[in-house]
Image 1: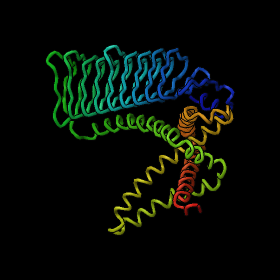
Image 2 (image 1 turned 120 degrees about the vertical axis):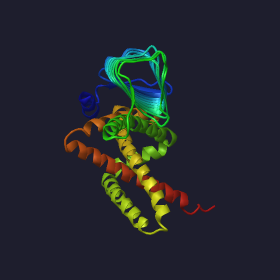
Image 3 (image 1 turned 180 degrees about the horizontal axis):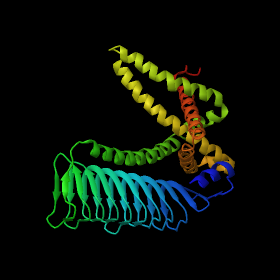
Image 4 (image 1 turned 30 degrees about the horizontal axis):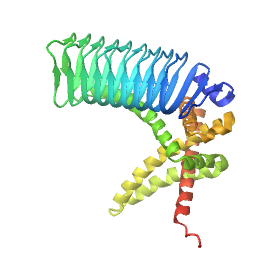
Length: 373
């Protein structure tokens, strides 16, 4: 991953790609990146695979790890290392040699799937019919386990069922207001037990929620950023361009908004009349932080894309793809002691300022006096 960041930020020479209609693709060494309305990877990938689209399908082998997000996600090809997936409907049909972390409205591990290590799943509905070689953690509304799990199972949900084909090598620990239904033909070697709200369970639940929540937030940001670029191409381009054209003003405005808005919320909370406005402002502040970070990532992506091929800036999906790359790089750089966190914070701050300045500019234009006839 470090080599990916270095190649992206410093060399640019290793980037190559071709765009076809509504799909953008690029490569850095053996790693593949793709974004579009529909992304189907039908060729083997020797490195990592990153994909974001309305529909994503991985049909061939990915030698290393796969990071995918979309409305519908299907993973039918084998994954050599880890799988990280988020979407409205996530279906895992192939073999995964490493860990699996998946979140979605519906998450399914089909009967043909073989997950060699642990799996952490979160969603409205979770169905596990395949094999899990390690431990399984699942958090959702409806959870149905009807496959083989060699390790322990930890689940939390309203409707938990252990099906007749379930073969569980360890124990099942659950937390549910309506209990758990275990089919008489199911085999659970370690037994089934309800876990109370003690600290041990809370720590486990917190770890699982943090992992799956992190997946949902990180990959969800890709979808929000894609929507910002595709639905508002001019706004996103001008907001990102503000960072480059006015870096000092962007940083200054970002600092003002980052500190000033919370102070305004506190002042409003002191007065009873101002509480509703404070709540509304708090929601807007959270949205500002998210969009500001995305504007910073879009700026980095547009900047590098302009160096690679300025003509590609006219393509929304190429901009989405390079924003995706920028988010990956920011996540890697953030892990560097001190200097990495500082660099990411400055991008974040400039993004907040640029978003605010561009929004204010649009507001002034919309509310200005009409032109004389």
